[in-house]
Length: 284
Image (cartoon, rainbow, N blue to C red):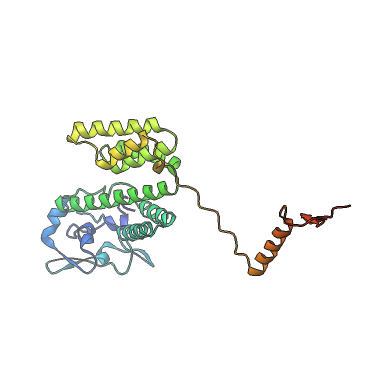
């Protein structure tokens, strides 16, 4: 998993072998120059920490995955899979489903992608400057997928289920406006308008004190909408009931004829009046 401990079969690598993490960003088939190794991982921490492709026989040895080439190293995927690649494919499928309006499908794909994470990427590796950039890229990708998954869940009306998760997230990302907006919206939809406004004030105080910034226009607009209890902030309406089946022309004719007979005043004097299936005939 992303951020998981290094498998024993992978960690036992000669010191001359560059970590697969260095070659992973370049992709299979690309030779990574040897001069980039010190920039990615310090020599004393040269261990194979990236997710290693898995084949029919299980985890492949590091020597099969990372091959020494003239002037550098080559990452040989061998048609296998890695957590990073699986995450990006699932997240991409989730984004496409979201764009198509399939919120349930988007939430499912993004939840699968996020399940591949078990902590910070390359948590067991002493990273150099180049690998630090890759770690930041992966962490940002994870945060983006998390943001979109929460958005999909909100559109599905799962605001109450999200409150516990968002409470933790806004405390961990104290200046992240999108997460705070989702938290405020979930609180408001759960009937906790005062707490939603308190969350806005805490965010504003943090932004002003730490960054010298006011909340964005989007956050200020959301606050005003909560103050006025805007209808656009209510939970999504339930799906409309299915339309009734079409009535055939013959059936429509019979219904019209029955209505004409049973309508008050439609019949002349002495005529019978239908009530349900019983025909009442006047006497006298």
